[in-house]
Image (cartoon, rainbow, N blue to C red; front, side):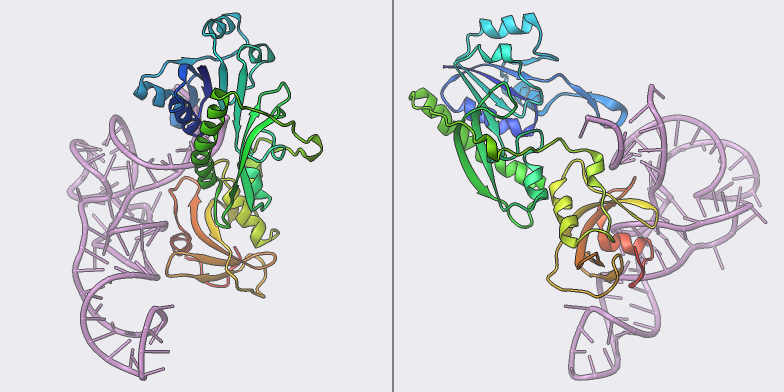
Length: 309
RNA sequence: CGCGGGGUAGAGCAGUUGGCAGCUCGCCAGGCCCAUAACCUGGAGGUCGUCGGUUCGAAUCCGACCCCCGCAA
């Protein structure tokens, strides 16, 4: 069996490893070209590209898949299976007919959270369970039949970055199971229940806006955890744009008015009153500065207990 | 040449008519106290990113360079 793999970020790597360890032949890894990013907008290759270079795997960077030459190349490889994991672009319907199997690794319990940000939204919504689904690729985004699915718990303090790596690790074993089923000819899919489908739309910088005075502590905490490491969160404290990196929810209550600074702890945390309770802020990053503990930030700004932030 | 912020004690920050290098926290020692993360007293700890220039004198003004970070995805 021959696999063509599509992927472009760190999440893809575990799935790629599952393919490598499946005993099948990896005909090609398809990724996206280097993107301009970082300071000075330097070109940086995708994580998958670096990985393949190191492992000397056959890799191709296609800026588009809607190109006759690209299609010809892929057809010429005569792949049996497409494996797609966090590729970043839609695969045109014309390509979907090439292989016998099209496996998409999707980090959510489909039909929940179809779309671009399936890892973040469960945290933002306060879900306690998510999972990994292996589905067929249909023309409609993330709507193909489900071959296999497994659940994973979301810890109350888990942020999206941690969850992403947990799901990546988790997907390794799941994809391997499915590839084994393919080998044994036992792969069977069940259609998704369209009535239960929900969307996990792409996030933007604006989604990271926070307010200590008009949001509940839990809502703030969910955003802080759900938007790591990108797009991140921000609020304005005394006119300064501050990113909240890590927060916690103490079990204590307060009658202070929202925004009031309650305590600066020796361990580095800072407790603040919100709309409905106390939020403990652990780490922050002022604009243009590096990350620091909330207590360091408060001391550096000479905040005293009781001020409204 | 995409835009921007920054480098001063272990940490976070002040510090302009250039003129003895400061604040909060931490650290060390002692004190107070039934006790303490609280409070009091004392103390250690700095090539002010690097190199050069201007000057009687530079953290401060000028030039070059190094490093860190944000935006932008």
